[in-house]
Length: 227
Image (tube, rainbow, N blue to C red; front, side, top):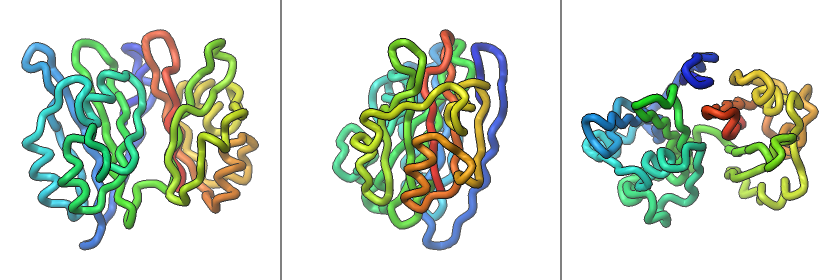
């Protein structure tokens, strides 16, 4: 995953995937070239054992604002769609329900010049990509990060948990990713003093990835996922 600040490449984060016969889930890369189409098509993806879902995805295209790739394209920021079997805005919900995929996370990526790129994570309840996802955004004054959305496999009410909480620039892995514009990997949250790490430890989570999403004017959002 490339992390761009305008036309400048900040970093590349590499994900390694493993599976077995029962593993279901997907990581997809979607792309739009406005000179070719007004829709977004699949570049490539990893699907584990979800062969039919993979086949259908490779033959599906999304206009701006439709489906997880199209909605992420329109938002220009990370997006989480929960309970995909009930989410009619997720256009592949029937295929997803058949293989047990229940959570979608979309992330805009690439330099954002001319072409549009979106990375999607599709997670199954039995074999989740991560046990918790969180999206943090700068407040109106851009002085701290506040919680925007999230999902936790333990059914924790994250919105209530973080309703009055914030993360300062440079604080913990999430605040550090904001300060540097670089992804952060933390395999021991016991050394992270932020509220996000503290609440993650309470839920038995010990590792975190923090990914900054940078627009032309600065940080748009931070996507964090926990293992």
